[in-house]
Length: 334
Image (cartoon, rainbow, N blue to C red; front, side, top):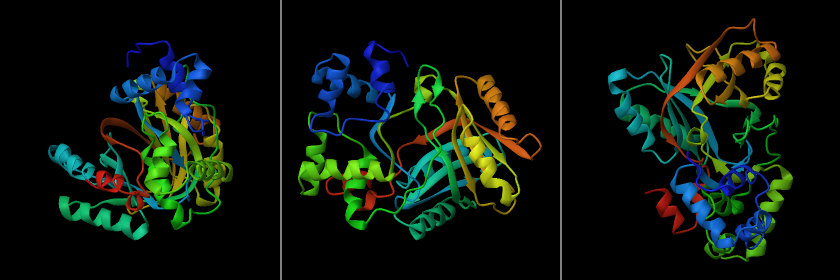
C-alpha cells in the first residue's frame, strides 16, 4: 500500500491495542498526533477503503463465546475458484485461503455454538459434494495478528483463553464490537443507541472485558497483505500429545510467529500443533519458520509447510452476529 500521509503509519501501528475508550476516540487520537478529529476520521476512512484496515474493533479471546473451527477441503484444481466462491458466500466463513497442499482450501467457520458451525460445514459439503475436514482448536498458545509495521509481527504475546464465556445479555454489544466501529465522531454513542443503553454502560462493558481478558485486544485490525507482508505460511507438526503444550508454548514465544495453537487430529491428517508466520516475501517466511522450529526444539518432528497461494475472503469473526441489534443484523446476514 502506498502511504499518502506521514500520519498513516502511526494511525495503523500505534492503535492496534489501547484504542481510546472514551466518548470521542478519534479526537483523542488526534490530540496524541497533533491532528484535528475530522482529519483522523478522514484518514481512517481512506485506509479502510484502501483495504489497509479491516476494522476497528474487538478481537475476542478464545472461549469468550460462540464457536469456530478450522476446516480444510481437497478441491479438484479445476473447481477451486467455484468452490471457494461457494464457501466464501456463507456469512459464517470469515477466512478462506488457497494453500499449497493436496488439501488446498482452508477456511474458518464460525457460529453461535458448535451445532451452528456443524450445520454450516454440512451445508458446504452438500453444496459442493466434497468432504470437509474438521480441525477444532484444543488449546491456544498465541493468537495475535497485530503487526508492527516497522519490523513485522509484534513482540510475542502468548494468549490465554477467556476466563468465562460472555453472558447472552452481552452478545448484542459483542456483535457490534466484532463488526467494528464506524468512523464517526461518537461511535460508542451510536452503539448505545442501537442497544437502548447509555454510552457509559457500553464503555464500562468494553473496559471490563479487556480487564478480564475476554478481549485479547480492542483496536485497529490491519490487513497484513495490503501493508507489504505478502507471504504467509501455516506450519503443522506431528508431536506427541503429552508434549504438545510444551512445544506450543515455546512456539508462542518465537519472533515472527503470529498464531500458535493445538488442534485435533483428523483422519488422514496426523498433525496436532500449528503455527502461522507472515513476512514480506517467501524467503523471509522460510527463514523465520526455520528459526522458530529450531528455537522451539521441533527440528526432529514430522512437519509440513503450507504457503498461502490465494486469499478468497478475509473478514472478522462473526460468532455473535445472530444477536446483533437491527439494522446491523440484516446487513450481516444479507
